Image (cartoon, rainbow, N blue to C red; front, side):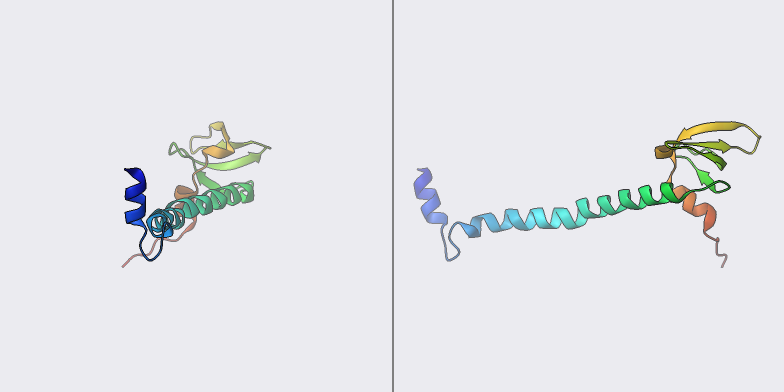
Length: 107
């Protein structure tokens, strides 16, 4: 039964023709899902490594502050009220922090 189905499926491209759609799906998935995610992770890592004392940031939880100390895996952040909080470097949001440095255009 299975041998008959396989023999019928072999057209001009042979068995490669039946695998071709699966290969195309994997390629499309890579370029539209995996590759952009890898690029975003790389950008996040570079952003966090480039932060220095005095930079204003926003954490992933929405906390606004200014970096007052940089350690190996953490930042010491001062908030508006003068409170000092220590956050892991992974808690810094690239997308939100960029809004602090980009000028807002008014139309």
